[in-house]
Image (cartoon, rainbow, N blue to C red; front, top):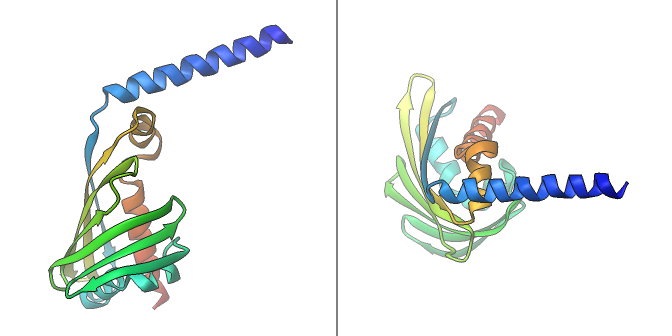
Length: 167
């Protein structure tokens, strides 16, 4: 029994070491992009994006606390599945383009989303480009090979599409 325990622990330790070394060789920065057709007007989609207080109604977010509001910009804290994350969302082109940055340098990840909302025959085409970084090598490995860099973008776009279907 002890022999098998040592074998299992050795395999786990070796796996952790390989993941760490492999992750440390991956670039800290990454770019990911995804797009979705949303069956709603561009104005409706833009309002859903910018109305962060109502995100818990259509996204997997427990609560949003607004910290500061200015014309075309909002700072807020999102209480979600990955803990509390501070964001700064600003309109770069009213109703059509946004930049959302993670506003907490202490997190093991960060970066920005560039969000574009354009009219289309089906309603609106939303494109999100992530320019991000991941500090810990193990997380770099996991985001690259297990979860994918676009996983959070795709979840957001899926929730936005579901919001449009709900009316």
